[in-house]
Length: 301
Image (cartoon, rainbow, N blue to C red; front, side, top):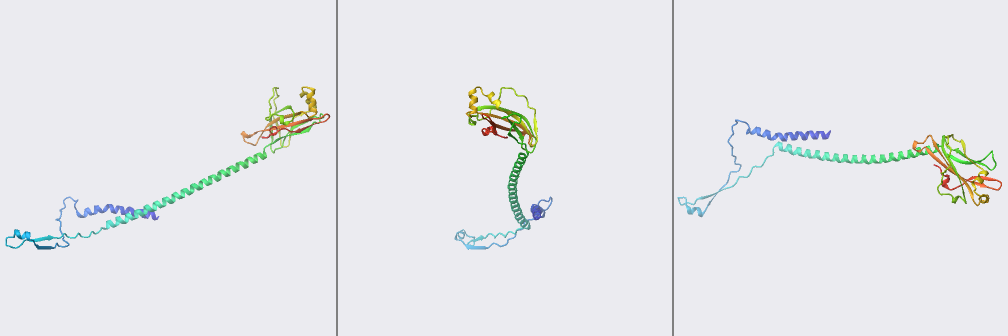
């Protein structure tokens, strides 16, 4: 409100300052057609002083009567002091008011810039905090999904139909259903698990029957491979190698993977994989099957 009053006052002063010359011209009447111009009056504030001196040079010329000619010196009159008009006072006051208004405007503009700078910094801090909060919420959502998603784990159970035969089972240990879309398994004979290829090789030349998708609810299991003593002899190409297996000089490894999907994860993260590897312990009378193999053969995604 105060700035508005100062601005109105400054505008009025500027109008008065602009109208002052017009008023002066109107008073003198120099611009009016037909007006008679009065004769200028001369006022001598201080009459000049006259100093008369006798000058020999003048006396030589003579005045005709034998007396020397007088020497006259006229002193210049002192200028009258200038009186300022009320228009000049108003102009001076208006200039001061305009300077105050300009300074106030500059001060307010700097204050506004500082406020904008503070608001910008606050906005950056708020945006960073919001980003951190969103990241934390995303991690929390991912952890919830991970805790609720299905997990297919591999276990080994003795076969009920054949002695020294074992069934490899896939069990859903998660909290939501899982659909098995693919499974594969291979056998390999090696001196120990360190002689296995570093990366599991699941390729085969034999054609495989297409798998009908299997859905497992939490806690449900399904068999994926059965292995027994009869298959050991089929793997050995000679009797000597079979004897080395009986004396554990070489070992039989069965490994494979199960690919499944869940129903709660995003579309690009629904496919999961479980790798498994087992060592068939072949004895002279009894046999066993245990989980074994390097970490790459027992990985989960």
